[in-house]
Length: 110
Image 1 (tube, rainbow, N blue to C red):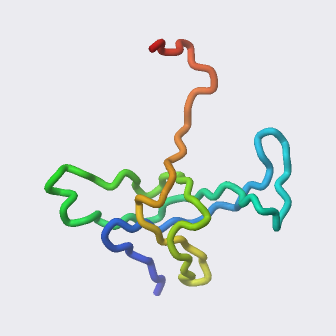
Image 2: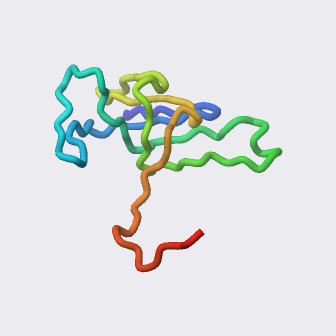
């Protein structure tokens, strides 16, 4: 029987994607350097949120399948059935990566 980790409260389970050590500029960040590579992963599961969130209309800002960015210090790493997963609070994540059009036809002025 396969196990699945169900996060509690405002926690999120993330599967880390392979770290990309090549920057957009083409610079290769060598392993062991002081600068950690950007850390990103795919959200596998989200908790229900905190109990008071419903009363003020707050919802989890991520959902399973979202591609997220998180700092190296986020959460705790666990191993479930030989798969390394990150469990962290939603507030520890830095953001969600979204696809955008490379060259928009019109740039809003403002």
